[in-house]
Image (cartoon, rainbow, N blue to C red; front, top):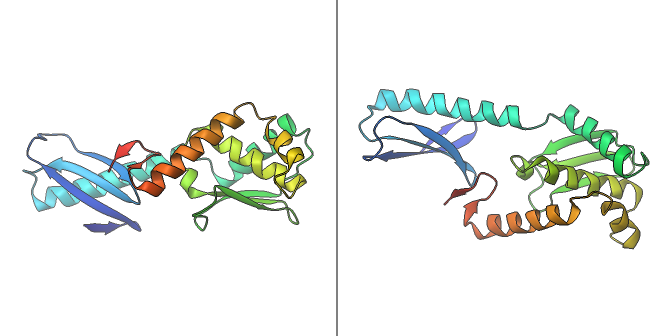
Length: 180
């Protein structure tokens, strides 16, 4: 195993693989699959290339904090009559047991980085959930009525329940769909 860019990298050589090199996330690491015949120098070059490609792809796919804030404001306007007024929205690496959190006193919203790679409608659901908490601090009926205004609420909750189960069981890197 090699450590690169703060990510753990596992190299898998295959005698069946002839020319192709692939990389994907599995759990918390990057897996690079390459032909067994590659030399050490080719391996180093391809691992560096594939890690950079994968990380660049992930950066393009994920909304920035600024985009999250714009999205939160739009979702508040669309589903909560603009009543929730977020001051910031950002990704958080510190959240390992929650999908999101907020601080009503300052209007800040944090989304777990574990959501990165999920469909946008799932991220939107978590944002709407946190926006509703900016208005209502508990999970009572009024709170769920607000969250239920988002049309994919039930579907997103089911997705997150399944993702949480899969990640906790270690059966799959459920976001990327790769088997462990």
